[in-house]
Length: 98
Image 1 (cartoon, helix red, strand yellow):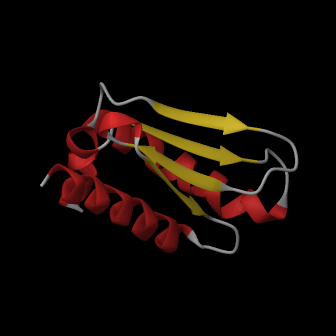
Image 2: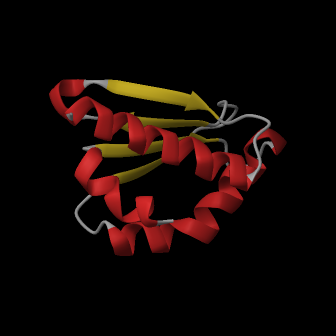
């Protein structure tokens, strides 16, 4: 999981959108509860924004250099799949820098 420490090198901002109460956002809420502290400890200067809105579909958005953004829908994904989606977004950021 060394990629977790690479977030701030490859991303400018990470946004997580979710509903506070819907079943479709439950695994996203659990992912945040279990992983936010570790991600923020490893990337203290990276803005990690958690946006809650009633009825919204859970999503993960990464902003890279030059305002480039990529998003992933998280509905139906479990915690491991959400972690894998975040890892893929980090890899995209590394590829954009190359």
